Image 1 (spheres, rainbow, N blue to C red):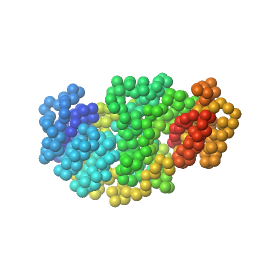
Image 2 (image 1 turned 90 degrees about the vertical axis):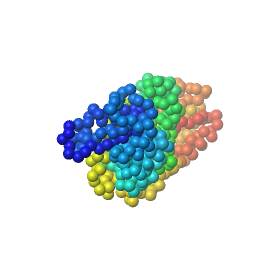
Image 3 (image 1 turned 30 degrees about the vertical axis):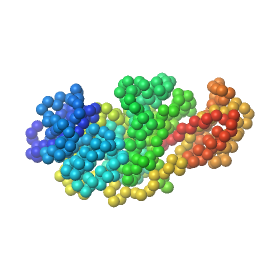
Image 4 (image 1 turned 30 degrees about the horizontal axis):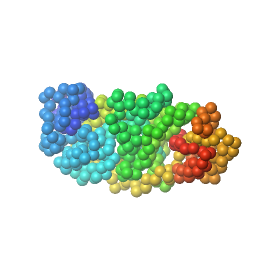
Length: 439
C-alpha cells in the first residue's frame, strides 16, 4: 500500500462506542480504498475511550487516558469527536480547533446548539469542522444540499430524521399496537434510550432539522426557535383514521421558506400514503429536498447504527484530507453559504406557520352539530377538504367526526378548536394533526 509519496494523515478518535467502533473498523477494513480516494493513507494514531469496544481489535493502537491528552497530541492532525453531549464535547472541539487541528464530529446537539461559535472559531484558525454524520446517519444529505444542489434556491426540506420514532409509528400502523407498548420494545431492541425523551418528543429531530435548515437556506443555526412536538400522544385510532383517509402518520422535521421568514418545525404529520417518504418504515431515515431547479428529491437509508454512521464519518475524513492542502478561503463553507452572506430572515413562530389539518372531533350525534362545526371553521376562513363520521364508534355519548382542512395559518385553527371545545356538552376534546402534501 505504500505507493503514496506523502506521509499518512494521523487521526485521533475520541469515543469508541457504537459510532467510534464502526469508524475504527471501517478505517481499518477499507484502508486501501480510502487511501486511493484521499490521495494519502489515513492512520489512527491514538484513541481516547472510557471502555473498550469488544467489536474492535485495537491491539497496537496507542490509547489516551484522557481526551485532552489526544487533543494536545502534536502528531494528530484531525480529531474525530464521537463522545456525544454538549459539555465535554464542546470543550474538546474548541480546544482541538485552538490547537490548529481539523475536527470531524457526529454530534448533532453540539452543532445545532454551539455550531455558530464553533464555525466562527474554525474559520479564524483556518481549520475544517466536518459534520455529515450528525444528520441522518449514513445518508450523505448534508453534502447533497451543500454541494450537489448548490445551484438551487431550496424551497423546503422534510425528513424522517429519527429512526426510533419512525420504528414506533411503523409498528403502531402495521400491527395496531399502542405507543407505550412499542416504546418498551424499542428500548429492549436498543433503538430507544432508557430515557426516550430526545427521540419521542422530537428534540433529536429538531437538532438535525436546525442543521438542515441552516445549510438549505443560508441562515444561522437557531435550535431554540425550532417548534417541537412529540409522538407520545398519538393513538392507534388516529393512525387508523389517517389510513382510511389515504394518509400515513410520520414524525417529520419540516423547514420551509416563506415570504415572511422560515418555518422550522418537528411534529407528527399526515402525508399521502402514495408518497415515497410515507413508505419509509422501521428505523430507516429519509429526507426530501425541494429545489426550484431540481424539483423534489428523496434521500433514503440507514439513519443510525455502527457502520452506516461510520460511513459518513469516514467520508468526512476523506474530505478533510483532500482539502488540507487547499487555501481555507477556497474550501466548501461549513454551512454551505459564505459566512458573511447568511440571511437574517426570521424563524416564524408556530402560530404563523401554515399547514392543512386533520381534526378528530368527539361530538354529540345530534342534527345540527356538523353545521355548528362547519360554521366555526368558515367564520375563520377554513375550508373542509374531506369529512368522515364514525357513528359505530360512540364513546360517552360522543361519536368521532374526522375532518381534513385546506391549508391555513395555525393561529386560525387554534381559534377554531377553542371555539369548538367551548360548545360544552356538544363537543369533547379536539385532536389535531398537521397535514402536508409534500408535492
